[in-house]
Image (tube, rainbow, N blue to C red):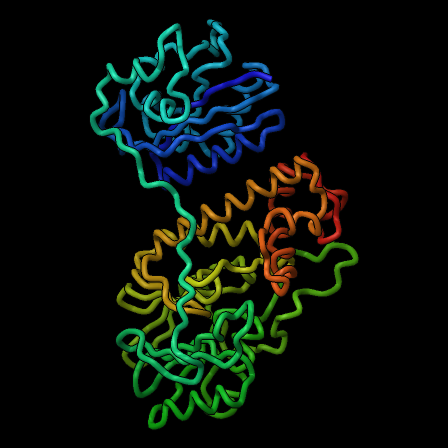
Amino acid sequence: MSRAYLSLGANLADKRAAIDEAVRRIGAVPGIRILARSEDFRTPPWGKTDQDWFVNAAVSLETTLPPEALMAACLGIEEAMGRQRADRWGPRRIDIDIIAYDSLHRQGERLTLPHPHALERAFVLAPLVDIAPDLAIDGIRIADALARLDRTGIEVLEAAAEPDFNRTLPEAPGKMVEIAPRVRRLIAPNPGPFTFTGTCTYIVGEGRVAVIDPGPDDPVHLATLREALAGEDIAQIIVTHTHRDHSPGAAPLKALTGAPVLGCGPHRAARPLHPGETAMEAGVDRAYAPDRIIADGETIEGDGYSLTALATPGHTANHLCFTLDGGEILFSGDHVMAWSTTVVAPPDGSMRDFMASLDLLKQRPEGLFLPGHGGPVKTPARFVRALIHHRRMREATIIERVRSGDATISVLVGTVYEKLDPRLIGGASMSILAHLEDLVARGILAADGPPSLTAVYRPA
């Protein structure tokens, strides 16, 4: 087993996400075990200075791969992530360099060890010193080498954090409150381990209003809603997705008011069913039938407001978020919630789609997300980044546990989740399955047949 040190850099698009993705891909290569990862460092451009700043990081690892095979793996990851080499010192999606491999000295056309310029570059040494200050290159301790270099503009970025979940109880079910101008909330009386205090029904506008997610088919909730809106008309009923705690109330509310049902399409699976897989998720509303399916980017106009749909598949294949005109509020359904992570349950849900939708939502300009359960998400960009980090750490744990011999989901639930509420075992099992489906599709893990709750898993 050999010890190697890698330097990573990125300055296109979401730089920190690119570094995270590269580290995950490195750790998934057979024969590699990552020992340490540095903090992310913001560094000024080098060589070609008329470009955006970089994020740099470093990892130390143990590997059974010889240097040339390790280099080939790094180049393969760069290619898979879209690295373009048109300009030697230009912008790049990702750059991975081998800085040192044991105490090996080698000079070749494609690989020189140690890296010939490592001791001259502060953007390489600063992250490396973060994880291995006593490492010596050519007899020089890297911490001493860094102390002699100009570190202007190099700074540690804020560490990726776990989501700061807010489980403060909102108002009691049955009480309508104003959340923001033109937005009110009424919580349905359906509390539970997956719904928190109940489904949040939102009312947008005044006079002639839109109702977002009328909730379960609960006569008490619908009667409370109509009573709270006495003197106003429900002009539109809008649905984010077809789970039984969100959409079944649409049909009876339409019958009571005559308002059309708009929003997501009928329920569907995120992928074709595997042989012998006959039933989809139990908690879905297969009776939901909208009057008008709203497409991604389509706008619903109302009296004094407009709502634009944003396709966010993952929790369900048909999940939509809606942005309120003015760019301040996004109704996030169950995709992003302040009180908890979201269950992703195949075949209705897809972890790959879920993560892609999180990547989309973290770039949104809205400063307030209003979710389907619990209170608002008040710093959504930061919160969504933390959700992404949380999911990637969960993925890394699953990979590690499978490599350690935890071959079934029934075992993984106990080792991946600590002190799990027994009521949540089913949901946790489905979320692990969603991760495993994605990991098998990416060639990181393998299964004895299609990924399923009963399959046996192993490293690919």
